[in-house]
Image (spheres, rainbow, N blue to C red):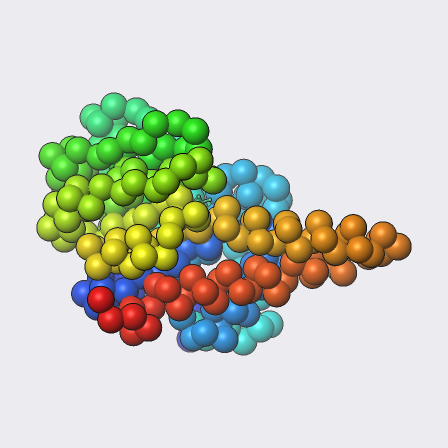
Length: 279
Ligand code: G3H
Ligand code: ZN
């Protein structure tokens, strides 16, 4: 039986149990293997997030799908795995992903006005459903050194009417490294939770564990991590190269960050698995 899933059912179950499923972004073949191996060891479902930049770097939409399918088979992966287009910039990009075998897509029209966001999301859903999950963003979510944005609840209600499967709101979260204290708007999150749709927390790297737990308690069901993995991996690789100047085998260099990356994956899973904490 295939372990590939759009994760719709798992996300609804997770929301009911006040748990969350991680999205870990992949950047290459090795990262994909490290993440799959660790999630399998922890026996926890995983969403492999692939940005358009990563897709281009890896070689293309089909290459990404074939790498993941190959690893699932060769490594004997049995946990649910989703292949998700992260921050898809256009309907065309989402369609390419769907045709290549992605099980989940995000159409990020959060920088456009709401009418365009709704119109394009609706058009995509007609093509994607019922097989492929569709995520939409409304905010837009900020990035490092820029002001926080906050989603408007009434706008969210309108976007949800398109029949999206998951909603990524802006609640003070930012992509990349936070340049100061993380200030999430829990009152806003409480109102969004009432909309009864799995909510996605983007930019979760750098958010303290206690805040993440609070978010899960208030309906966040999918949590996206990229920067934390990148920093952990890069720090180890940098140390390895500095201490092993004679090494030129790329396998040894890339592998030197494996344990650091797997430790982050393991820690995040333990944080997201609500059986591991009570509140
Ligand atoms: O879409 C990807 C995520 O939102 C990752 O954000 O790099 O801040 O963890 P992050
Ligand atoms: Zn994001």
